[in-house]
Length: 258
Ligand code: PEP
Image 1 (cartoon, protein in one colour):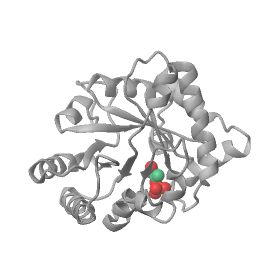
Image 2 (tube, protein in one colour; image 1 turned 135 degrees about the vertical axis):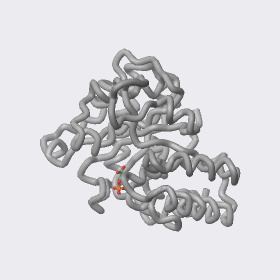
Image 3 (cartoon, helix red, strand yellow; image 1 turned 180 degrees about the vertical axis):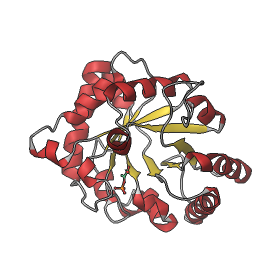
């Protein structure tokens, strides 16, 4: 089974709709100048909700191959949920992916495994591919809870039937800190996640599911992760806001001579 590598940018709460247009244009132009092969590597950006319509219009009008995703969704589809965003609206804006259970949602917004599971189900209802984020804190790592990401993954998928999933292993201590997990550390956890998926959802599902690493990824360290057999891509926060840097991350194959 060949899994298409996925390079995803999580913009978090940065850039308004005009800045979003400028950044997407710059990424697309930089990649097209470099004859980037989007069939070989999928490139996704997840701007804030208020940018999505402008981003969609631009991508459509220019025929860019950058794929749109969102950073979160409601577990409900419509109704009295002030401030929430339905997966239906995201689908209508041609979002193909949605981040679910990012550590900032878990810690700042108190989302637990149950909430994450409901959001995964909402994503499925609206044909969005969930990018399920999991990962341990430094405290949890130091107390030997190396299988926490496996537990979070399985809890989010309990009783859920799905065809398409991306998992992002993001050790919380490596997010936005400049502290990077080694490629070997990331590979170890990611291979445990794949094993857990095989046991609970079957070998075929585990084999086709892309599992990303996230946490202080930059152009100068992406290749070490992408060389690992179980790491299928990266989820990039801070570095995804810089067009040159993000384009260089997406071009990782040139760094490893593929
Ligand atoms: C993230 O927030 O998903 C992330 C990986 O952030 P950063 O790359 O800035 O560590």
